[in-house]
Length: 219
Image 1: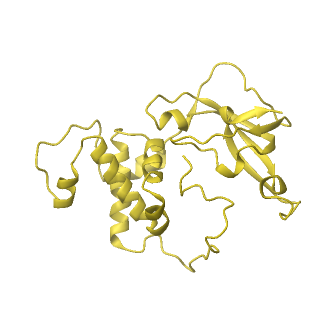
Image 2 (image 1 turned 180 degrees about the vertical axis):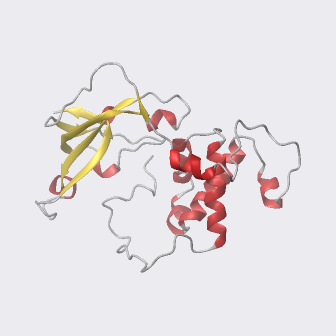
Image 3 (image 1 turned 90 degrees about the vertical axis):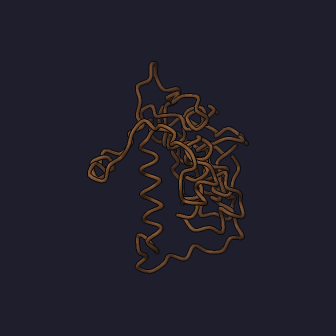
């Protein structure tokens, strides 16, 4: 979707000002927000792409003004309610009002380091060969989906060159909708800065973006 998370190349939001010696967490509740998000993700009730879409769907005013972990926690509350694990009344009151819904897996504190170290690999097998090879000229398609996509808005309708063909990966657009992983070939695509942002950009600069095959058309 064309949401506030997709701000690449947009002007008017001011400079990015890094915080010197920024801590990992600014408050104890942020640690809990991350822990709860990881633990609930481990249950398998939803996937990572559905989780991303939940954050993107919080509304521009909230997404832009809320802190990073406020976004995480609010999206988690949304997912929990959507999947019938708890009601908004139960979350507001901090206690269950009816029997808990079943979940597939529970992440224990003892297993957390092992689970985090393992990660969540998204490389998959796929029959056939990639449609593109390094050096091919391509153009990113022009789409404006209402659901989740990993094709940045600033790339759409822009021309680039295949830099590297990667393996097949889970396709986030279908995975976020619960329509299956639908593995697609992934490519590193090289775009000229001037192609993306006009003649005012440095002609020597380039941007490399990983793009799934359905995002690309041959020129």
